Image (cartoon, rainbow, N blue to C red):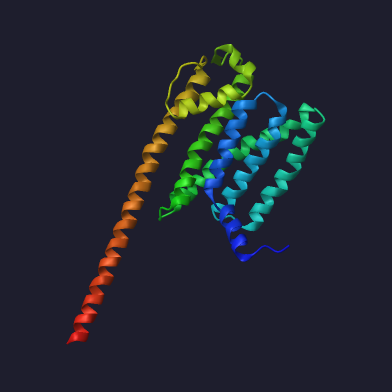
Length: 244
């Protein structure tokens, strides 16, 4: 069945929408926070991360060929992940976890470059900026998880590692937003250093990017006002000449 033109246009708009990316990132966080210790959750998380990256590629101007190249990498890795969950073979989950980590590192850089290159502020640019902020939290959640698995004493209380990734994704977003609740704390130099880096990135990102978006918005409004005034003046001059 062939889709109607409005439906195709709507689907094309969604394929470029960073609001959809935000929804997928939030879904990843909720799943990781709620079921972080279960292997099966790797399947939906993989799908959501892959979907977010594909939309980000399209939204930042990537060609169809580039999207296909990403799919060519994602598809076999996802099959391995699915097989690992279905047949309870933990070793098959490794490639999927590595790819999710790599994509989580690449995606915010790609989207941020899009935001910085845009000269007109619209809702999609704002959603893209929010997506980058959320992805920073996801990236550090992954990094903290790897750190905790490498060193069980990296965070206190020690039970953090036993809860899987969920507690460390929570800790990442608490750090990113500078809430500082204190129920989880870094206990090694590496954990402290990464915590400080994430906190600084969260604050600097908000201050610098919001300032930039506001400046671009003001510049756009001023340009539109000046253009409207110029058009009005030309119309008045034209009428005055016609009256003569």
